[in-house]
Image 1 (cartoon, rainbow, N blue to C red):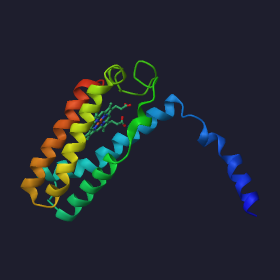
Image 2 (cartoon, helix red, strand yellow; image 1 turned 90 degrees about the horizontal axis):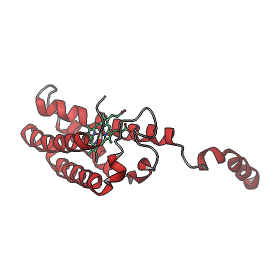
Image 3 (cartoon, rainbow, N blue to C red; image 1 turned 45 degrees about the vertical axis):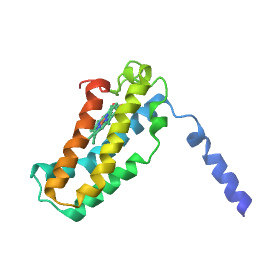
Length: 149
Ligand code: HEC
């Protein structure tokens, strides 16, 4: 029984096991940033007073952002997946030619998220200050490494 199950599984595997093609890498990369944005959006709205401050919700969004910083994104930066190589992405080729600088922007983002976590539930003012810092790291990276629409 086990053997039958296993062979069925193996037969279904090749599609998954193949190296991801550029299109899928781009899709996943954009998906990652969509997740970041969907968690950050309500926090930014609370920071600006566009949404009532809710400590529990703010903590939950911040925790999800922390979870996203634990994901190792290196697979999302496979070579040959820049805007110079494929359509449908705004990732500048500079990411690959200046990977150290890109990683530095990523580190600044991770650090701002780490500081956001305790601030999120501490009050609207505290949240707003931490959100401002995180937002600065989004912009800091986009300015250099994301092409305009
Ligand atoms: C280390 C660099 C970096 C940081 C930090 C960063 N981004 Fe991005 N972001 C990118 C790049 C590069 C792209 C383009 C991805 C692509 O098109 O392949 C992108 C794309 C996006 C997109 C578009 C996704 C899509 O579907 O096309 C959104 C939304 C976004 N980022 C939001 C954010 C927010 C919000 C933050 C901060 C909370 C943030 N990003 C932080 C580099 C960064």
